[in-house]
Amino acid sequence: MFDIVGFIPRAVAQSIPLLYGSTGETITEKCGNLNLGIPGVMYVGAISGVIGAFLYERSTETMHAVPAILIPLGACLLGSLLMGLLYCFLTVTLRANQNVTGLALTTFGVGFGNFFGGSLIKLTGSEVPSIALSGTSGFFSKSLPIADKMGWAGTVFFSYGFLAYFAIVVALISSYVLTHTRTGLQLRAVGENPATADAAGINITRYKYVTTCIGCMIAGLGGLFYVMDYASGVWSNDAFGDRGWLAIALVIFTIWRPHISIFASILFGGLYILYLYIPAGMNLSVKELYKMLPYIVTIVVLVISSMRNKRENQPPASLGLNYFREDR
Image (cartoon, rainbow, N blue to C red):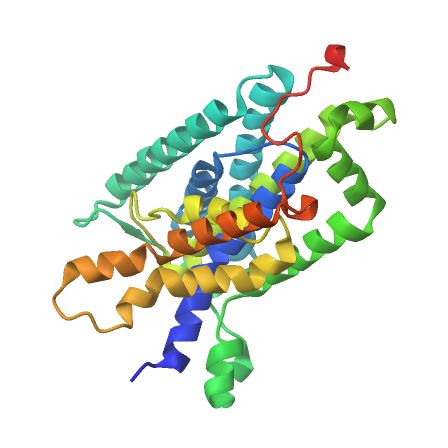
């Protein structure tokens, strides 16, 4: 029988990196920047947090909750911020091609993570190609105290670490800011028609820099969650798989609406691990077909939304295009 109580928590845990990544990318795309470097940003955010946690665990014999959380968290945000600044410098200041820059950042981020991850593994003298930060992970993955007392409801709703709930809060706040605040209105104006926004006195460069950097910092938290919570503090090179690309696909699936990402990411997370719960015997080809489900669903939604051709379902008009003020 299908174990729904066991399936939902795993689907939710799988969905949190996707939710962070899609929320960060949605905010970025709303200002007109197409950042295909999100997989690299998540990778750098994760390894930055791992470096912070590693240094803290090596420097103390007794770990305390506050520094054990804040040090990796701060390192993650800093690393992701630097990636956002690099992207903005290349695409906004130097006006480099956004697609090429994003892909280059993905390659750079993965290489950066593998280099420093491999270095840390060598420092520990581990016989396996991984590093375990179980002490730090315990603080990140600690569930709510009431989870064990509420049976299946506690397992389904309250058995996650604080970063899981924070991802939902960030998505809801992002959705509110984009649709109900003056800042969100100006941000959407920058993404739709930067020339008109510039003529209205909106600082295009500032909006693109700030928004893209915030989006990268949010996406970086997805990488940190994956290592510290989902993977129980174990870092292995190239362990992220295609989660960063799934997060970008999720932006299209949700039609650039962060609040919808909360449910859509759980759907994607469930589809991502569905092959583990559906009997397929020894037929590996069937399992590989199940792994394709998130991408098939994205393609179907993209086709349907294109056929409906409603403006509110389309990406920002200037998405992926650099703004040249002298052409205004």
